[in-house]
Length: 188
Image 1 (cartoon, one colour):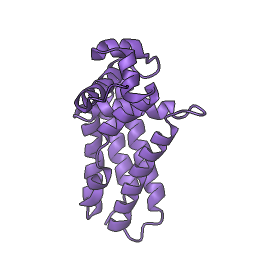
Image 2 (cartoon, rainbow, N blue to C red):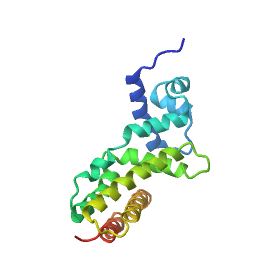
Image 3 (spheres, rainbow, N blue to C red):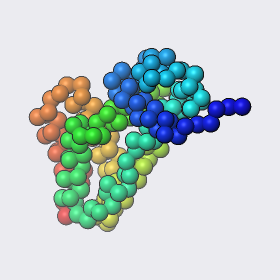
């Protein structure tokens, strides 16, 4: 008879998975070193999650913020621009830094044909684009293409965050994030 899942232990493992990937990367992830890091065995990880991919997706799901809430209270373009530029700082220095580093690795892995991460990555992008499109439509009902603007903003910010982690060029990236927000979010 299979051993019942210890849900508290499962949650602890998921948190550790995110920290491990942020420190060691996704590309060469192997269950045995991950299990050692987590103080368990690869057999127990399979017991809890089934596959490495299911474990990674479950770990990412624990980190997903309420995206709709991030934009729900925005009523004007200036507040949206401020929130978008602040998200850059929050995601490079704040508590979301670790989970976003992992998410960016998963998004990269999702570009490989038949990637097990493709459905998760597609959904993550869709949720962001939908929430931001809704905010743009609400604050600028005459916006010619809020979905394209949302796509530009989300993809641009994601690229700038990645650029920051690679180059560390805070001044250039800070100017670019403000330029992106100013150009993509119309004036009131």
